[in-house]
Length: 148
Length: 409
Image (cartoon, rainbow over all chains, first blue to last red; front, side, top):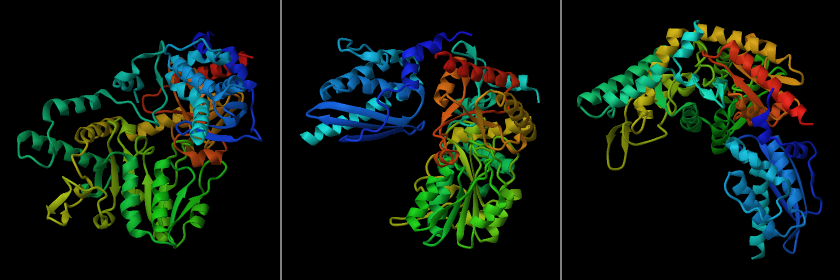
């Protein structure tokens, strides 16, 4: 049986993150807690972050959802941990462009997230991939406006 | 029932999706449309499009006649006493909201009870939550048994003399459970309550007789029964509809308009403010003709056969959980399930690459998902054009999803 099309979507690295998620759990000393769900399908995520002086010192996620949403969350936490807020938001923008199949800036180190490129060919699954990122943007966006 | 000839009436089924012949197993979300319905809507716009109940010109009369003829078809289809009891709405959701808003708010007060079940669609939960919040009434749930059915004993225990409204689905869109509506109507009436039935999932698949059921309100949608989207029906007993206030006001529904107040048209038009969904209602009439030609009993038997066939085949897959009644005879043509280790979205995507359309998610029934202790499920649903070959392809697709997700490790 051929799995060609599916392989585009579910690359080994995605399945690895799904089955062995990085940074899974709830951060005890976090100062940003964001709950987000996808009301159309029931996926949900709780993102906990510790932000200090404009830097994401630590981050964890916890939730329920399909392979794409959970793998994307795992990859994201891995990528943004230790980065400053500005870079994290920039990465989120790049991710959003990539996932929609648009041209994106590949000068930054994107880590594992490029494995999710194939999602752009499955429009019904884009929302799965962006759930964690939206939670991150919401959390950091709020933190930013608090400082202003 | 000649499935091959039925299928040939549905042009959409004759196409490749992702390189494979389409297997459409999402009819509980919306059904496909036969050529005769498409042609009827098309012909309406090409030949008689005009506003109804207004002009004296020829087209206006033709459009009005066709629109009202469709109402008579609906009346006969559900065996209502009179066309005054048949209101065209936007769909089941609007129908249920109309009852909750108009009848609910006028007849509920603090201390009263509204009784629903855990298997309701959001459209038969939220309007009642809102009516309860607005009036101080209490919302109560009839519990489900292990197999996703309700017992009449629990119905009797939950409905009390304080209960004013019982709202229940005839067929669950997730479990396929067929509820004992006639018996529930009796219990509701003994306690002085009215029964509101969500008929979205029953009307397309079985013969409905609102007088036999003795329900007080009955709501359904055209698009799930081979008709166009955007139109549905609210049936209500005349004695209730007559006393109810309209929810929407404007053109079409008025008798006299004075400067500071107005009077309403008689039933059913007082509930049809604005230009109605004329083409949709006429299309629904064509869908009813089509379904009656095939025969509702034939459709129901075919679906029972399919669900039995599917349950037998699907239950052989390792790690599968099927929700709802175990006995296919107690079930409508809906198969909701999960496969251990594969999220329902992933199942749906794998099936989609094979040209097979199923639904994945919470199916607008979050309280039921909570009761089932899952966040999402996958659902295959059948209709008169579904074949055993469709189910065979679906089963191979499920096996493939399982293989794929265990293969990658």
